Amino acid sequence: MSKNNRQRLRFFESRKNQNHIPDTDRFMYKKPESQYRICVIGTGTMGQEHMRVAALLGRAQVIGIFDSQALSMEVAAENYKEFNDCSLKLYSSVRSACSDPDSDAIFICTPNFTHREILETAIDSGKPIFLEKPMATTLNDCLDIVKWNASYKSFIQIGLQYRYKAQYSEAIFETLNRETIGDIKTIALSESRPPFLDKVGQWNKFNIKSGGTLLEKCCHYFDLINLLASSRPIRVYAAGGRAVNFRDFEYAGVKSDIDDHAFVIIEYASGVRANFSLNMFSPNFSEELVVVGEGGRLVAAESFNMHQESATEISMDIETGERQTSRHINLGFPKAIESSGHHGSTYFEHIAFFDRVEGKETGAATIEEGFWSIIVATAAQLSLSRGESVSIEEMLKQEGEAAYKWLADQNSK
Image (cartoon, rainbow, N blue to C red; front, top):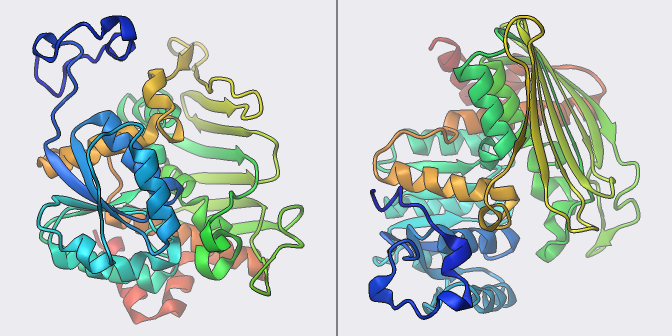
């Protein structure tokens, strides 16, 4: 049994009545030795989640952190003691974090509008880089990242972790690998959830810093839809706005302009049609994916009652009529993994990252796929503001010669 495949008996290894087992006799209880050392830039909610997941997975040790806010670093360092007894370096700048010769990889978990600038410093390191979603807030900044990645000697992985959620990883396997429901014709995806959480500086309440709700929150979903459609999006129409959340919210004298609901329709070159709906003034969390092909229907659902703090309910239904077996499946990860962040998807995202460090192929989103999620999100935000459908080709043409040339290169592949 290899060390990467050894089964972890977490239930027993953490029990007090097993503390009499000395380290020399720990095999099933033995925690993996860290092979890699990483630094984390940005120690807010997501940065701390990545620190926690790294400790849980055990393949990497966080050796240092940086955040422009001293309190964020102090809190992150204190919280880290709950699951790791190693001391942390507290870097004084982005440059010092990226240039630390003791680290093997860099995780960038800062606010959306800072991604491009920080990445530009990080790539001087030549190290593997994890960049949280969205990769940037503008198409031109994304194009810069695509260009940098093309000549980068290592790799940049975008944090589109929803590919690793239990229901979506299973849906991807059933539809694209097993082709259980045949050629996909329509895709419907929805999310209902409470409002945006508080952030330092409240940057997620303003379009200029977040990129807009449909980019900040929904690039995950557009990535999933693009993946399932297996085709290029050509036209987007969106309707939505501000119905409930933050209508009277101001920060530093500036009024919030973030949207709290939307309906988005996407047309693909292959003829696949998709729709996405978002509601951000729901009391609890729920998601549903419905994919219909020529041979059946797949429904993947997730619900989490945060007020009851009950376990997440995740399921998948495959309906194929008389063609083959139909089934209902309850899904889930072990509690320790599911509770580590984003219902376990961050844990498997880390596995993909370090697998890629070791030269293995993974299902992580490529830079180009990350950019396509931004393209759809940007077109949706533009459509919402204009009140009319947006042609992807026309939007990129208006963005400039570089964007339009990139699209031409993509279409020629």
